[in-house]
Image (cartoon, rainbow over all chains, first blue to last red):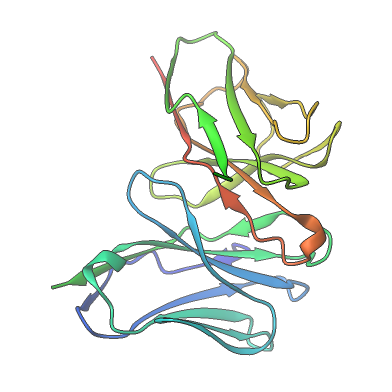
Length: 113
Length: 114
């Protein structure tokens, strides 16, 4: 079992719809959770991080964390063609020690006009 | 402008050659990281350093070496012992005292073995 798993996609949604990206992790000791967006040929850019159960909203993005079920998700409301990218989920076990991040393989999102 | 720079953007290596990838940050971050990304894959950690003059192996350190002589610099050497070095190499940094360990990435170096 991989430590961090994501569906590779592609996930295709129409413009204006809600895109839902999911990530599961295997280590119950995981503390912090990150979503990165990576455009083709570019480096990842941080969208959001979350470390408490529940929802965290930032503009059109909402991160959801459920530690009991060991999953974290990213919702993108009012999806735009510019949101088309690969979304990487990353998990950090050591919140206060600068521990290494474990990345999933990424989910490719395609938003159709 | 604060940020992370990597050079060169593209690098071509002949078999048997060592090459060094540069990574510099002016964010005053304590920790720095090197990742490798292969097509259609996530990122895999090569080496990381949380403080000057100290570094630890990541998941795929074989065939690579690093140094951390200055806080702002963390160069990666890809040695001839790395059998399949063609990949996209990403450097990142984070402020460990902040607790959340948000890592920020440089633009990357694309290495190709000829």
